[in-house]
Image (cartoon, rainbow, N blue to C red; front, side, top):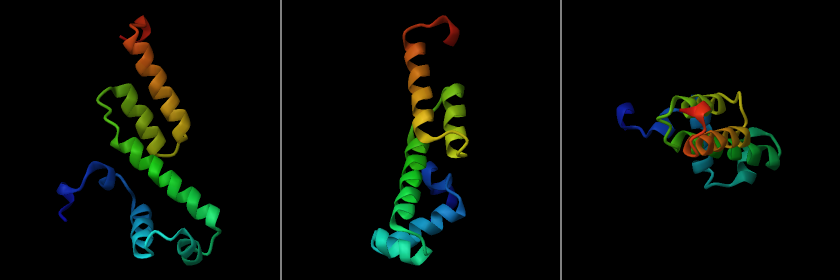
Amino acid sequence: MISENLPAWLAALDDEDLAFIKKFLLSSGSLKQMAELYKVTYPTVRLRLDRLIQRIELNDQAAPDPHIALIKRLALEEKLDYDTAKLLANSYRKMKKEGDPRWK
């Protein structure tokens, strides 16, 4: 697949994430097998997968607004956790929708 045809969520992943996804697919989605492969515990692999899912979800969300784009970028760079980023984005959207003068 040519890189310009990659979906944005896939292009945003680093090499380590792509390697994890490849190994996950080749292990038929077995977290137990992934834990053995990485020599870590099952919960560690589950946490890594959950964080990867969150990063993909954040990247999939449309963010034409610069404030939302900043929140999204900080979350993708793991400077904000997923739940905090989601809370900030939702709060901002709500204030903007309700006509809060600070967000016009």
